[in-house]
Image 1 (cartoon, rainbow, N blue to C red):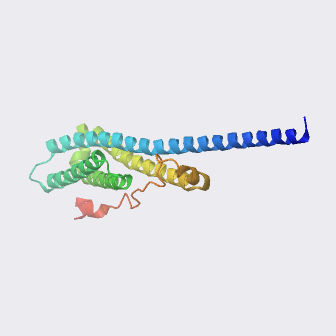
Image 2 (tube, rainbow, N blue to C red):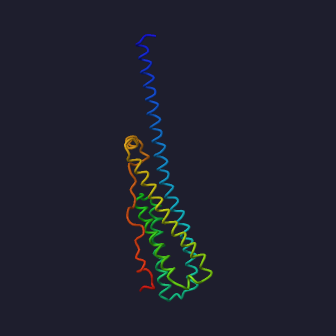
Image 3 (cartoon, rainbow, N blue to C red):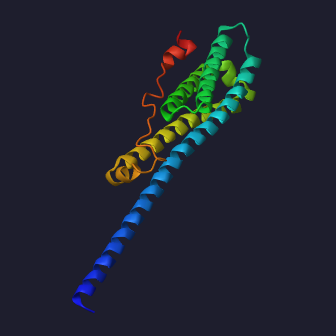
Length: 207
């Protein structure tokens, strides 16, 4: 074999190795982008599931409140208004989700649900007749847990979005991702405060 033939073989081998490396790298980028993108979608599903659970727990506490409180009292009216606020926020999120709104709109609507759920929890926990009722104690604990869960689920959802954006925006994935229409250059999300409540203002004992 001549030196020229050997040189051609070497070049072919080098090019083949280079091509395999590039293909492997591209596949690796696609796989990681896909995992991160699916994590964002999973975060949305987790939040939606937590929201359904929270709604059921709030219904349980509401039924107890409905039994133990006088309907014409300020106590009942305050709790009823807080529950109405939660229902309105939840319905707004569900509507935005059904209409296919973008992630920024969904996370903002989700943050409003968390805020409304926490407001309901504060109103309910302010009244000793509910805390003291034996039948309501477990419901109260379940509600507290579920309210914490939707906030955690929202926080986790935002973390998955940030992870996706960080990786998608890095040099090589940014170049490769430009040819992959499935993966947006970035996913916008609500960056405001989730918990922005004046507890003293919401607590009737301080009024």
